[in-house]
Image (tube, rainbow, N blue to C red; front, top):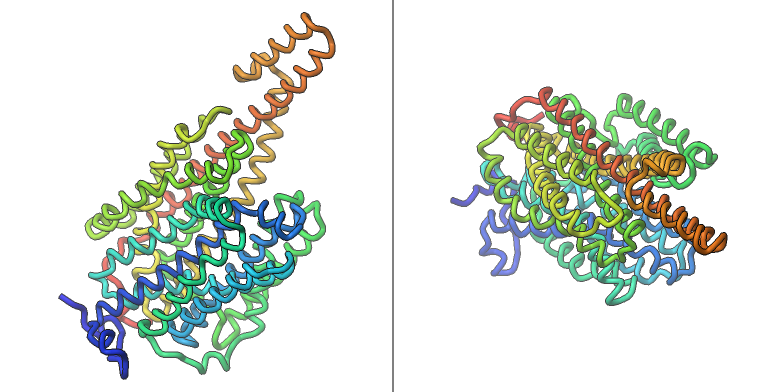
Length: 532
C-alpha cells in the first residue's frame, strides 16, 4: 500500500519529464532518500579516507609531519561547526536547496582538493569541503522522519545506521587501496561523479518543506560567532592537544580560553536571541538527552576503535595500510548480517533494551581485545571485530528511534544536528583521550618492566636471559647489541600492555549510557503530527 502524498510531505510536480512524472510519491521519496544516503556516506568516508594516506600526501606536497595533520584537523573543525547549523540553514533555505547545495559544494571542494598546488591551498579547500559535509550528515537523518510515516521507517532506520557505521570502518582500507593503486588526488576525485549524481537527484526529488527565508534576515551573527569559536577551538584543542602536551603549549591554552569564551557567548545568545542560531529546546526531552549521551559514547567507541586498531597494527606489527584495512573491515561483515535483524526487532522490542544489548556487545568486544600480545594480528582481532560490528548495528538503529522518534516536527532538524554533533564530539574526545591514555599507560608499563624484568612477560624475560648468555660467551660488544635489542622488546611489550589497558577502559566506559537508559521512557508514538 503506497503512502499518501500528504503523509510524505510532497506536492505534485508542476512540470517534469514523463518518466519522472509517472513515479508515485513513495518512489520519489526513496529516490530522494537514496541520494541523501549516498551524500551522507561520502561525507563520513572523507573523514577517514585521508587518514591512511597522510604520508603520501605529505610527500606529494613537501610538507612536514606536523603540518600535514592540518589536512585532517581543518576538515573536522569545519564539519563540527556546520553540523549544528544544519537545522537553521535547512529551515531557512529548505531541505532541497540546502542539501543539494551542500552536495554540490562538497563536490566542487573535492575537485579543488585534488588540484591543490601546496599544503595551504589543500587546507583551505578541506575547510570548505568539511563545512559542506557537515550539512549532508544531519540533514539525511532529519529527512528520514519527514519523508516517511512511522510505519515505513524501519528500512530507512537501518540504512541510515549502516551508512554511519560502515563509512568509518572501510575508510582506512579504501584510502589505502586508492593511494596504492592510483595517486593521492584520487582520494578526492572519486567524489566527483557520485557528488554530481547526488546533487541532481536531490534538487529534483527532495520536496518535503518550503524555505523560510525570513529567518536569514534574523540571523544571530553574535551567536554564530560564539558557536564557531566554541566548537572550532574545542576541535582544535582535542586534535592538537595530545601531540603538544596539552596545556604545556601556549597555543593549546589560548584555544581553550577561546572555546570557553565562545561557549559563554553562544549560551547567552541562545537565551537572548529572538531566533537562536541553534535551537536547544530538544534538550528538554528526556529521551533526547539520554540518546545524545549514548551517541557521544558510541562516537568515542566508533572512532576510537578506528584509531586504536590501525595504530596497534602499525606500531607493534608493522602492518601497511592495506593490511590494516583488512582488519578494520571485519566489523562490516556482522554489520550487514545484523542490520535486517536489528530493523525487524526494533518494531517489536523496546529500543532501550536493544540499545543496552548493543552497548553490551561493544563492551564485550573491547574486553576480548584486552588480551593482545606482540604477535596479535588478523586472527586475534577477528572475533572482537565481528562482535563489535554486531553491537554497533544494535546501537545505531534503536538510538536514533529513542533520540529523535518522539520529537515534535519543529525540533527534528535541530535535534538531528545536535544528535550527530554529539557523535562527532565523542569521536574527537575519544581519540584525544585514547592518545593521552596510551601515552601515560605506556610510560607506566615501561617503568614497571624496566625496573623488574624478572616479573616481566615471557618475551622480555627470554631476551634478558639471552643477553646474559651473550655477554658471558662473546664479551661486552655482543652484550651491548643484545641490550639494545632487549630495550626494543621491553618498549614493545610496554606498548602492548598500554593498548590492553586502553581497551579495558573503553569497555568500562560503556556503563555510562547503560546507567542512563532507565532515565528514558519507552517511545510509544512519534509526535511529528502534533506540532511543537
